[in-house]
Amino acid sequence: MRDKPEIKVALLDLYNGIPNEGMCGFQDILNRYRAKNQLNLSYRVFDLRKKCEAPDYSGFDIYISSGGPGSPLDTEGMEWEKKYFNLIDKLEDHNLSNCPQKKYAFFVCHSFQLMCRKYNLGDINTRRSASFGVLPVHQTKAGLTDPVFEGLADPFYSLDSRSWQVINPNEKRFAELGMKLLAIEKERPYIDLPRAMMAIRFNEYFISTQFHPEADAAGMRAGLSKEEKKKEVVIEHGLDQYNQILERLEDPDKIARTQHTVIPNFLDQAVLSLEEQ
Image (cartoon, rainbow, N blue to C red):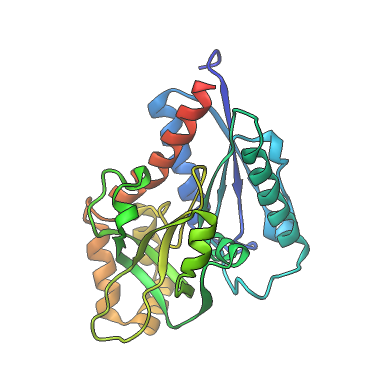
């Protein structure tokens, strides 16, 4: 693998020091992808939100930006967020340049909300109640043909864990910027509320999901089996929801398939482009 071109990935940690399974999920996917494809691939974690660590835009080929806690609105103007959007701006400028080797980026959950705010793609607000579970995600017409979802059913299932949402797509902005809405949240026939946006392709190189495609079924089961976590979920969402989550975690066609499909499909696109260059 040493004679193969090096592929460098930057993992942007936006969890603000809060213990989580997300960063482990990303690293597991990268380790598995590297081994399966025998790549000279390396990655480095940047604790951007807690320690204000930011990568050099020119030093990496692929960027993956995590979820995280709290409001995507209240951090506007904070030093870490200035560094974050400065990085995004530089990546965009690079991709618009004549440089043949483009930069690829994947944004998850909290990062999805930040990027929607940056581009003014919809209304960002708190949900009536927090969403938590292994829940269906419905593809749009554009999503059905996007390579990132290739191999998934419609709907497919993924971890949805959030108190915030982005609703009411700003169709004018989507059209102006050439962006595509790829997925929306589950149908709720008895609730007269807008369905949140769940995946957006910003351009050929940037894609984002409100759900957690990095979520690992085994890791979630282990976490939910802890009495403290079980109590927390049952109090907030009920015993039936807790049992439904455990049942769906056992189904190989739900969260496990999503984890083995979405980010690997994104990496396929990025790595193929890099190898061609």
